[in-house]
Image 1: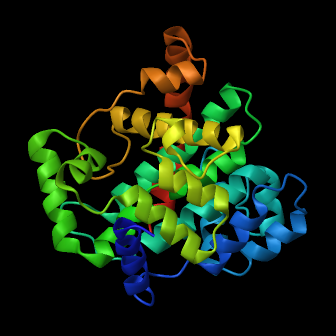
Image 2: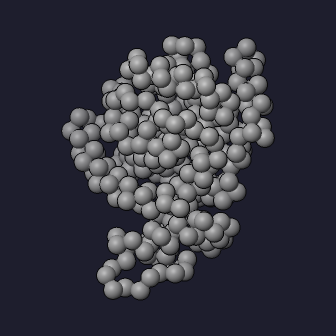
Image 3: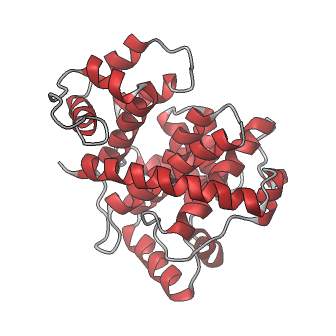
Length: 299
């Protein structure tokens, strides 16, 4: 084990008992979300574990997008799931759980849990949409990985908020993104820390791998990844993260516009025309999602 490895392990150990634990509902959902054959009743049972998620699902299903004028309010889970669809219900539950997790950590005045949450949901939506656009059969996993990709920032905030705030200021002054600032200053990297936190929580190895490597373009440097599908999933989340930053959907802690990497685009076999086509479709999806996020963020 290198000195760097020991430093990260020390941080993870010091955070035990301080960092909020993964909500039970989220843990259960992430276990079954990758299973296309998961029984409907299993999803219902999980949602019923958390009344707040149940309430949020009812809030969304009773918005004008899903309930027509003059229609009676939907007040039970079965009707809500039928109207929204299973995929949307799972995502509302995951989004709500992540927001609850973020809100348990104290954020600085210039960086809110809601803004990081909106960024994370944006990356999740984009990752899932991009997987579908590329006909890559892991859109549910792409959503989960996109949603959790910045979990290391939560750990950094809890471990040393003053240092994290210094890095935010440095990023703003220098025009660098958070990752570039971490590299330049030799700071704790949120991506590597996120991978370890995911592992300590017992989240799927897939989600942890994406959190760990979502800033690393060179596949040869992703030293513990052999599966080409996992490499592609990391590429998709990395591409989506750049695109969401460029579109300023939420706030990941910096203001730099980061265009998707040409190398990643080549690996995903996306042309400029395809990127433009995808962006137009994504804008529609994000506008729809933003309406739901407004509903979910209102307590």
